[in-house]
Image (cartoon, rainbow, N blue to C red; front, side, top):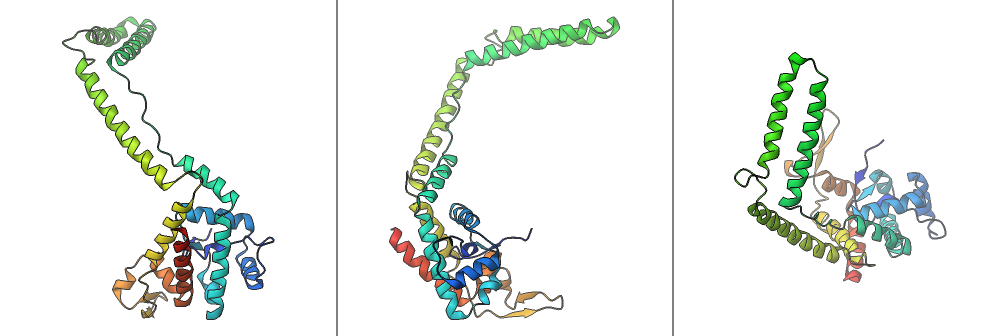
Length: 274
């Protein structure tokens, strides 16, 4: 499997959504070139928004278009994205995602009385098993079992000894405080979840996705020089650019026209979502 490359959210697999939606012959042709379909495109759109991710399979295919055609293609793609994320199908998937990302409440705490009885039951079971094993061993081997059984019986007595047991009111107080801290943390996460994933409204998720793209694509130097080494690999002449992450470099390879067109569309869309 070829490694998926990361790029502009508005390129996203050149977005299927073609059946009954796309009249642009160039877009249809590009879809065929990328060998994608409507179901795959929808799945990748949802993955991108919820990831977030910014993926296309081949930057070169986009750059092979004439510079003027790239902006038109990206705008067409962007409109298809907007149409799908506003659909009932997308909102239903969003609701599933929302529930999957809902924080789980802390488990009901167990206090000393319950923990003591659970320990008692465990010890009794262990003693019974050791007694059975002892009875099945040769007499000259039973002594070691007798010592273990003696130790388990002592533990069984100690859990009721106030001077030896760990099951005390102090333990209950610690458990209570611990549970309260967990509840506080849970309630805070639940509040944040409700803000990030409001019922029936994926707009915050979409805003987060678009904003991330605008931030990541804000400082691309399309005039940065590159050179080809003896190994055939293309590298940036400036080491600072060579040290940039793969996503920055992919924006660079996509080119000024493509990235600026995507940013223009993204900025307009973001203003509509506020």
